[in-house]
Length: 142
Image (cartoon, rainbow, N blue to C red):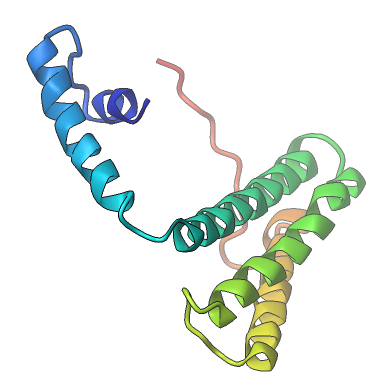
């Protein structure tokens, strides 16, 4: 699937088997080198990136619900997004595969980050305030 994704990104035709091999070989080589690492470290990075993706999805969902459905209902996604923002940021700041900061400092920074995200959501999305409020832009379908 990685080969197909890369081919799609760079608009590389996959009919020719030589092109498929040229894309597959570096991916297999990368997979070989990754297999030599300690999987517990790789798994922690994967777990953090998965949680970070969930955080971003919650913020996107909260924005969509607030803009196009019901402002009050957007809090169903906003509250978990704030929590996930604090958790994801404080984890990578204190984890041994991250910045290795003290847990108290990391938790304070994570909380501040979450509150800044909440402030930006409330001002730019919920109330549409500030110099550059998030504006609706028409999408062009080709």
